[in-house]
Amino acid sequence: MGSDAGPAAILAGAAVARRRHPKIRFLLHGDEAALTPLLAKHKTLADCSEICHAPDVVRMDEKPSQALRRGRNSSMWHAIDSVAKGEAAVAVSAGNTGALMAFSMFRLGMIDGISRPAIAAIWPTMRGQSVVLDLGANAGSDAEQLVDFAVMGEAFARAIFGLDRPTVGLLNIGEEEVKGVESVKKAAHILRQSKLPIEFHGFVEGDDIGAGVVDVVVTDGFTGNVALKTAEGTAKLVAHFLRQALTNSLFGRIGALLASGALRALRAKMDPRSSNGGVFLGVNGVVVKSHGGTDAHGFASAIDIAIDMARSDMLARISADRAAIAIKDEPAPAQNPTGPTPGQPEAAVS
Image 1 (spheres, one colour):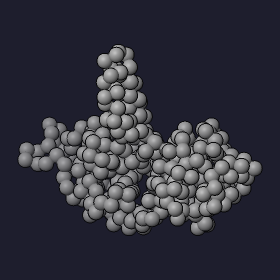
Image 2: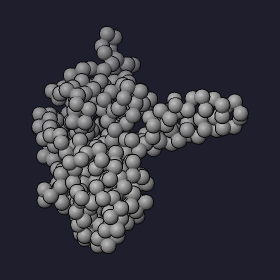
Image 3: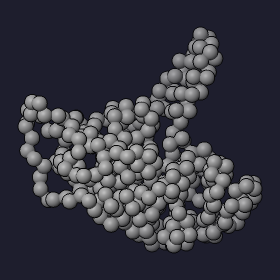
Image 4: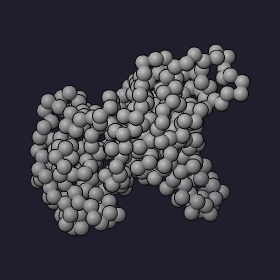
């Protein structure tokens, strides 16, 4: 019920997902009077769905604390509760992000050893796809939390991409070991010493995300969210300039006609709906947050991710990998202020 476009877009997305995954079943939490006529328009979806009446809706402008106090009869709470009770394998919502995170933490709890959750998403790159986290769950993070994000990110990459040893990098202002804040440098020191099933690349910079230098990019939620919104804005700017160039003259329109196939392929690659869906990693259950303004195609993509997560053993992997890391309260080794020692690699591999 939380989508900007209302439940019609959610049900249309569920119908698309049903065609892709014929064995999936849905519990549709929301106002039964509103959902029943909308569901009747999708016969195949109706055959595999059950409406679970929830009279209230969490507003987009509602604070998480307010939602926790008054939201126990909301569609969002009921969806999370169905996962906690084992009635559903995953919960997917396009509603209020803060409230969804608060409900998830309160009702599902956290995975043992993980102190804070993170929002992870799949990011299109020149090499294919990468996982980036945190994208907004935490404004700031200490070294231990960044290590937690690395553990969750590599488990996510193994589950979704099928990688045995994903490459992991920490987002920083430079690749040199002397650069960055202490929390980032200490997290790098811990990851280099760990025995995680990863290849620790070291530090990566902002332009390395789109280049696909690593499979998993780890950062705090403030920086990650700024990077995400910047990338989305840049994609829209490039599309705007391209559209102008191809429509402002006769030759441009002829060129667009000749290159129509290539342009359609480019549009498909740049379509954010194809990678819609942020996963709440760290909570003891599978919760996927869809963009509130998405359409049916985008919501179906969020369901695709949720299904992949449900079929994996990612929660157990996170718990086991986190337990294998011993984090000591000690500073990272002092670095040469003029740069790395000659002959020493700038990025160590564990």
